[in-house]
Length: 404
Ligand SMILES: Cc1cc2nc3c(=O)[nH]c(=O)nc-3n(C[C@H](O)[C@H](O)[C@H](O)COP(=O)(O)OP(=O)(O)OC[C@H]3O[C@@H](n4cnc5c(N)ncnc54)[C@H](O)[C@@H]3O)c2cc1C
Image (tube, rainbow, N blue to C red; front, side, top):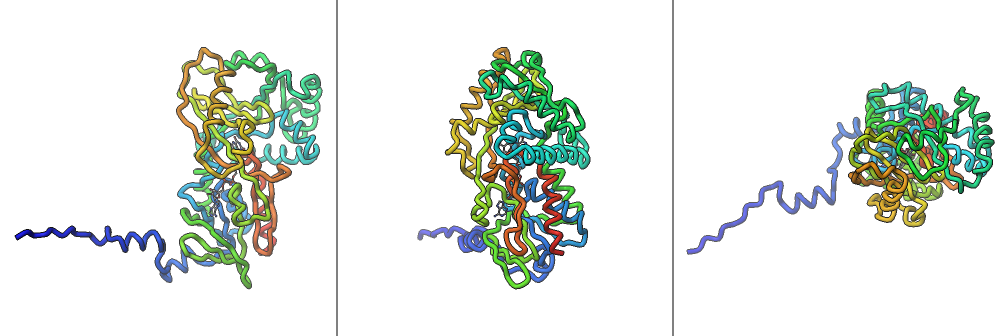
């Protein structure tokens, strides 16, 4: 007689349980959960990147009684804040000259001032070691084919004069061409130095800020995505991919490049930015943050490695995406740029390659807006949010607290 052996299926392996977990991710909420984690809030903030975190902190500072919850769809923020280059900078000369021409001198200065104050605020909130803050100086490399090359000295004097009231420094920018060779750089004709700029560790900054936000009594729910929102009588109803509905008096969207599905009318344009990092390089003399070509290329030292990002202008259309997978075209452009401009005596390999997504507005200025009754957005630091978000958050907090 043949005995057929039946395969035992343990309860946790049963297909029906598998289906239950993935098709219906959350069972009915208990009354305890409804009255604690998912209780109605005064303010719900969507997106726990730098914009959402700084906004939550500022709002709580304005009104400690507010019940605030941040909602983040990933296990850690995933967009720009932990994927950037960690430049704490307030603008390279060619970028500022370009911005003054396109948005007007006053608007350009307003953004410079916000960025300068933002860096000061980051320094005041965290010890340098907690966020890897280094006052290493910022530099811009410029070549003779630059549009305003012949008038460069006059333009620098003009900028120094304008920035004096913001930085308190009569020479925010100084020419220091002799440092090019000393730092192992080649293939550039001029170097402009800004000694007030710094570099930091983007992961440590977001982590330290998150701890500060939680310590202030603000709840953060990770791994839950907002899929839709709707204005109801006295509150906003938020739907999520976990089939848990949340309600709040007001909702603030800090969803940056990912805003279009929830607020298409804001017309935020995504722009992917890619970064590579070399292996440790023996004897690397490069120190500081560097820009070239109106910021389309940027690089810095990371200890004795080089981090370089940008080259978006080599594939503009392809990079208008929220796809984080990156591309070989841009990666190769970054590798070539490094080979061309870092002295050949250095030996290295490329050890890291990642991408992040920025959000851009049409006029390149950050957007803080009331979208409709109780619904707000703080979005699009246009590729420079490290220094901008701490200050924009103050504006956000003023706007939102008008409702209470
Ligand atoms: C490659 C790169 C380099 C950069 N370098 C610098 C630099 O050196 N210096 C500088 O100042 N700036 C730099 N930036 C820009 C800077 O990082 C951003 O301006 C800033 O981080 C924007 O922060 P944010 O919070 O607005 O956006 P994000 O950090 O993108 O945060 C948005 C968050 O919203 C969440 N989210 C989106 N939709 C939903 C939803 N439906 N439900 C729940 N959560 C949602 C996302 O998961 C994300 O975590 C760089 C950006 C990139 C990509």
